Image (cartoon, rainbow, N blue to C red):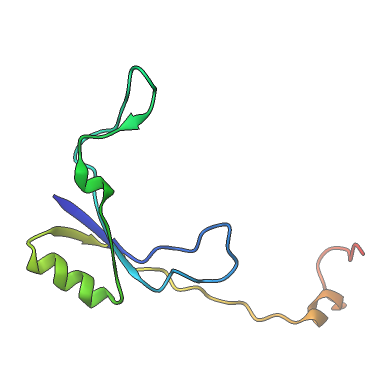
Length: 101
């Protein structure tokens, strides 16, 4: 039973960084998903694939995994580098390319 501990990234549908400060412990699937022959729904016999546990900090997630004897893989997040530009950058004289407005 192996788990992944990581901090989820923001979804494509949001511009802010809400729900990205919590750490997530999620189990790796131990059985493949299969399609139901009658309805075509996908299902799995692995119940741990449905478990997702959120923690306020990385240390809490690591402590939980170690306390319960769960093997885990820790993935550190890449920090965002914001590029500070101003509106005046659009009108620079040494701008590469044409201004299209």
